[in-house]
Amino acid sequence: MTGTPGASSPPTTITETFYGIEWSVENGTTDTTTEGLDGEPEFYPFATTGSFNAINFDSIEKLFYQLVNYQVCGYLASWTKSTTESPDGPASVVWSGPFPIPYTLNSLTITPSHESNEEWAKLNQYGEMSYGGVLLDTTKPFSIPTINPSCCGPTRSGVRTYPNGKEVVSGYNFFSCFEQAELDYYPRNSIALNLEIVDATEEPPPNEPYYPDVVDEQGRPAPIYPIDTITSAVADNRESITVTYTVTMNVTTDSIIPIVPINPTLTVSHTVIQGSKIEDMIEKYMGMANWPNPGEFERSSMSPGFPINYSYTLISGLEDVPTNREPTTRGDDAKEVGQGELMRGDIWYDPSVGETGERKYWRGYDIVSELEVVEGGDNYVSLGNVVGVIDLELDISDTRNNKLRSPSPYGLRVSTETKNGKIVSLQVLDGGYHFMDGDIVTVTGGNGKAKAKVTIEEAKWITEREPEIGELEP
Image (cartoon, rainbow, N blue to C red; front, top):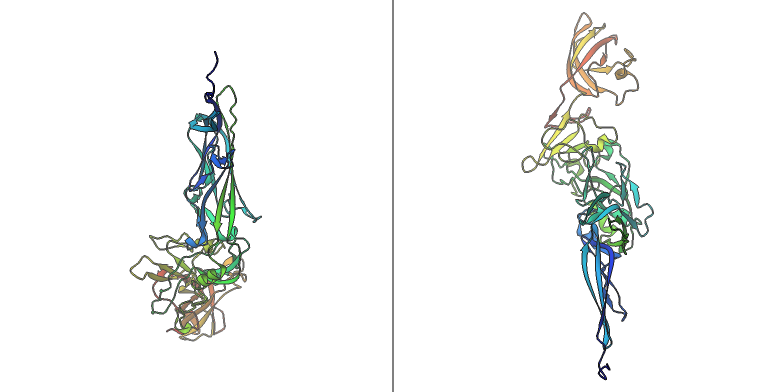
């Protein structure tokens, strides 16, 4: 039979099945296009690249950007491609899918890399790898087939809780992203704890506590700021950097014929915009630092020691200081350097009390309340102001009383009552500093051999500061 002259051939359709990973990016997108034969982009379901939404450090107050719900997920799927060719025009392509396929997960890995920072990956204090401050989670391998997505990425909640109960925020450290910038600072309580300068690439300066309007019991300014001072700064002139996450998924199926996904790896880029300039940071942090005195108070009008040589200060709710009871130890910042025991004169501020908060002082453990005469000595007379000195030679086998003791006890003053040249009783006028229960003191005067045993006053928080020895009371 002869065809009709001039009639066109009927279109033909070819259907093919392809297998791959159906990728998705939370807080971002995947690229599901490819270049067509005509040079124009056309749909292609098997993404190999994607991106998280860009972030800008200008949009936050801190120098640490917490990442919440930044996840990459994938599952095994098939797509059918129907290509229809017609002699009268260009071929048309129609994709159908995705059609999930049950799979078992052998592995799902994710690795972040920085475009230039060679020290991007470091172990944190808990032995976990941190990528510029980012902590990662991933679905663990499983052997029971599923069609559900497997996910990985920065820990979804933005917080990692360790077995000891400590929480660490997961996200970008500004100075790890923009590593050419430098910022060094003294943290809060640096003099009280004898702390060294902190490199912001290791620990960004905090934004809290910030209580610039605190006053002491006399109404004198006693502001609380998050750092003591900035010591040096260098700028990074780049406007942005790119962090690249490489995600690889290895799966198997129960199919007799092995299924090999077309796109087992997805590369996800993340643009991080600097926003803030180093000059702005310096201005910001010097405006919330203790030593520069941003409140511009007359130093003579401030609470004793402020703004530089202030006493160690605890804040309820910070550094693991409790919020519902009086603290019995210093905060974590002191414990980390082996100085966790409360010391006389420590300040505790609870911002939750009343409209202005409550401020107290630690009176404890080292204040002499009573003295028991153990040797009366000779040639003493009754006097109203006598110095009591710690006896360093009576029992040097006792580590409390040896010459290496630090800080050294001082400041004890007593009145003496005598009979026939011997001391029969002592009254404490000033309890001194750094004494311990059971210490033996020598009473000056007489033949210098009168001895007394120390009893320490009960430790407690008080509302009025006790002046240091030699300090004039207001």
